[in-house]
Length: 239
Image (cartoon, rainbow, N blue to C red):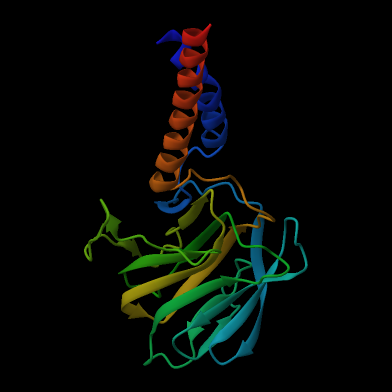
């Protein structure tokens, strides 16, 4: 048995070497970040309206400073309100009777390769409301903030009001965020006050192999050890 374990040890060590670099599956989590925002390296502003429903956002700080790094698209015609005095333009519905119910923030690729973090600060004109977030990573996997224990819970929502302190972040864990969509079941006419991002330029970590792949690799290593042990026993018997 000791000989068998010795033959198994080398491939098992190799298996550990292959698996350990990936500490978990890549995913995107969502967290309330008011009053303490997450650490990001890029503020976005100086919006440029490119269509009735779309604006581009420029990096005011960070590695892409001065470049347009994201596009914001809404489900209604919008206007930029720069009268707030806070340095950030509000994105308002052009027609107050047609309220904004969906806003998508998408990374411009290039210059970026996606974002490690997107933090948004929804805002309303004196009323309160609820919203949820849906993020898509650069591989096309979708993550929904309403997910609880693997199931969508339609009551699991974030809230916002007119205080301007409603920051929520989507955080990539081994994943880069390609887009983030904010859904507002009860629409409001002023929805984005601030956008902050972590302008990541490449993948963050590797991921753990699928269970079926890992099982196949382990079975191969065990078979390798068993074959070597049998050969050793035959060699000793013939000596």
